[in-house]
Structure formats: C-alpha cells, structure tokens
Image (cartoon, rainbow over all chains, first blue to last red; front, top):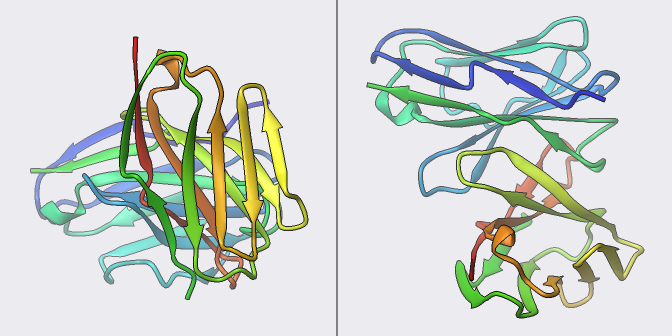
Length: 114
Length: 112
C-alpha cells in the first residue's frame, strides 16, 4: 500500500514569511509524528498526534511553530515568520498505536529560508 | 532520560567486507530498538525492529542483535556492497511512548 507522503518536497521561502508543510500518513495509522533534521544535526522530535489530539508537543521550538491534524489523517505543520534557523528537513512519520510500534517515515520536506 | 549513542560517526570499508555498526543506550528498560537507513537527501527507511524480548533479528544480509543488560545493539552487514553506502541510525521509544530517540548515526561508505 501507499507509504507516508509529504508535500512539498522542497520549499524555499523568504525570512518572515509563513509556510505550511503537509503530511499524509499511512491509512489506518492513528499516531503521527513530526521530526526535524538540521544540517549536520541529529533528528529532533517536534510533536506527536494520537488521532486529532497532540498529547506531546514538547519539541516545538517556539510559538511560531504549530501543527494540526484533521480527520485522524492529514497533518499540517505551520511555521510563522520563518527565520533562517528554521532551515532543515522536516520529516513526518506514522505508526499504529504509539511510538512503541514501528514507525514509517515520509521522504521529508526540505525547507530553506533565505 | 534515555540517551542513544552511535560509534563510529563514519566508517569506510572496501566492498565485500563484513562490518558491524554499534548503538548504545543508557536506560536498559526499552520496549524495542529500530534500525533505520537514510540515503542523502532522503527520508528514513526502517531496516529492522527488534523487540526487547528478542536477542536478534535478521533480514537478508542484515542482522541486528540486542543486549539490554549491557545497553547495546549491533547491526551486522554481511558481504558489503557499494549500494549499502548510507547513514544508519538506531532509535528507541521514549518512556512516554510519544517519540523515538535517535542516535546521531554512522555514515557508512563502501569503496568499490
């Protein structure tokens, strides 16, 4: 079946603009996760959804970052007033149940803030 | 707080060699451990998931072992090929089960 998909694959934006990143999880997966990978850095957790609720949003770096999930499916990560330090690859993953289940990752969105 | 470490950060070996990648973790109370592969500019591909009750898992030329008591896992790659060149990451679920904690990865290069 189809895997996790993300769009756009690449996004270049000017500093100060808002961006939206989209994630389509595997059908039937109740859990959805956003991670960030900055150049030369490790993978950093951002937020976890279970259904449409976000019981763990502890990784969001500032209040410029927000995310929502609708219909227990698609999720959107929004970054307001983008800064150059927001440049990174944003990865989405999904799983059955919780993070104790196997996680399946999307191809990522490469965000460049100029 | 769980910490995951991978050594070495980079490894280069000639084609055909067998090799071992290492992953260590500080809290032995883990649910499972997952090994991923990441190609440059791409997402993560799950290679093997080994449950805490298991000692090893195999898939083709890959074998992952787990020793909870010593806080270690190894990924063994047999008869390495240039196509195995990638970054390999291990990851463990956080105690909250809301995220997985990644090691920093081992960048593997197989020389033809």
